[in-house]
Length: 208
Image (cartoon, rainbow, N blue to C red; front, side, top):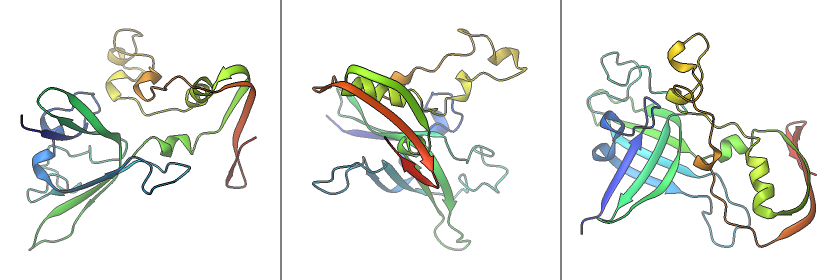
C-alpha cells in the first residue's frame, strides 16, 4: 500500500486541518526533531519542525493582501505532520508555528521558511507551585505540573467576552481537556513525598 504524508497548519485554529491548511504539496524541505537529537542524552530538548514551502504565488507573504491567509500568518497556529500507511494514520509531530519567514527574491525562486516548536516553549515559561505530593506515582506528579501550564486553545473553543456565539459553556465554549496535550504512561516509581516550587529567580529557573 502507498504511504501518504500530510503536513497541515491550522491557520483558522478551528481544529479542522483541511483545505488551505494542507501544505504537503508545497513542501520543498522538511526536517523535525522530537527532543532527543543525539544518543545518550539525559534531558530532551524542545521538539522542532522546520518547513520550506513553495511561495511562488506569495500565499505565505504577510504583505500580500490578496492571499487567502491574510492575517493568519502569525505564531501559535497548530501544526501536525502525519503518515498513513494505508491502514493506520500516525502523528509524527505536533506543535505550533513560531515564525514565518518569506524569502525576498523577486526574480528568483520564491520560498518561505516556517519554524514550528513543541510544548516545551510553554512548559519552560510557566511558574508553578503544586501542593506537597504524598505516595504519588511519577506520572501523577508530572500531570499535576502540566496542569499548571496554559496551552493556546483553538479559537473556536475559546471564550470571547461579549460574543454570544463564543460564551455558552458546553455549547460554543469548551473547558480545556489536557489529555489533548499529554498522555502519560503509568509510572513505575511511587514517591512517598515530593514537592515542586518551579519559579524563576533573577532570570533563571529554580526548582526545589
